[in-house]
Length: 153
Image 1: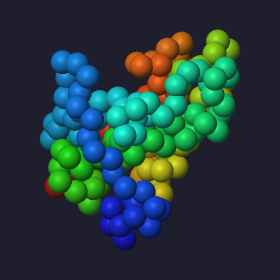
Image 2 (image 1 turned 135 degrees about the vertical axis):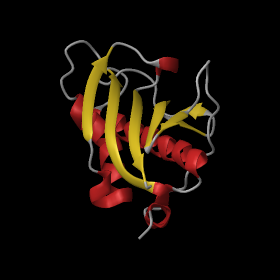
Image 3 (image 1 turned 180 degrees about the horizontal axis):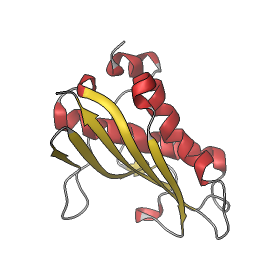
Image 4 (image 1 turned 135 degrees about the horizontal axis):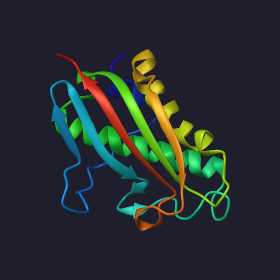
């Protein structure tokens, strides 16, 4: 099943691409690699999850925030290459969790992004990853995710 059909089966639709908020572009292709700029949890032009995990947010709501970040990234990939079917595999995910000092459950939060990518791409969605707690993110987003994918030939 192609990735976009899988998204539909999951009841998900790709969001409209959000313009870059600074002097950068949402994606850069070099060879067969597509580097995706960090995405935060925005839907309908509004932040869906604000604040720190361990204070205003829980691991579960952080997980949902990471899932939205990954969905936004998929929208950027499709905008860049025309179809998610052109993705050969997900190579790397960097996940940043806006969290309180001493928070140690960042991997559980970033699983929201990882689980979605595996659900959409199957084995090709399995990736190397970093899950890092930070003291703040743009617009007070709970999560920010960066992704690198390999494109088919």
